[in-house]
Length: 135
Image 1: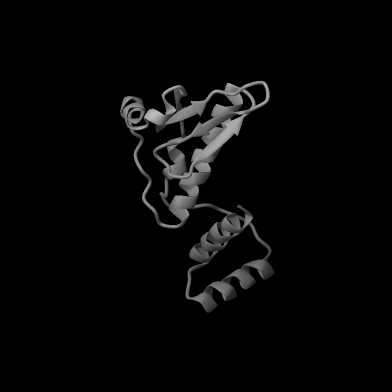
Image 2: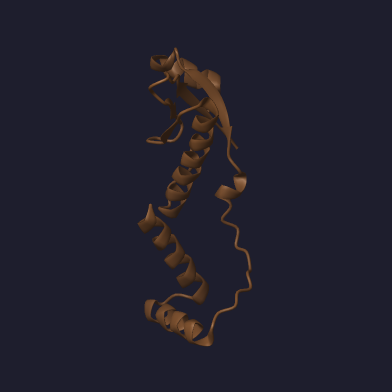
């Protein structure tokens, strides 16, 4: 998946600013063009993960030409495309094999039962909540 980005040219004292028009509120910056694009990729992945975690739809990327016509305010900016690994959007269930001490497993099972969840559902929810709390 490739998301177009608008890049505000940097100077010796200001970073390159990056806006992802298809993802409202998604932006980043970097001291060099390369760093700005790498940070944009990180921002896009974080935006998508947050949207997925909260049940939002992920907008499909627009064409650069359509965005350039729509956003005349960025006429002097540089346009680029940032590639995002489609696995970020993959909610396919995958069976995993983990090893835990029995006492930990019993604790997980008890907590899952108390909330009416399966072990897998409980672990997934806790991981998502932990991720949200850390961002």
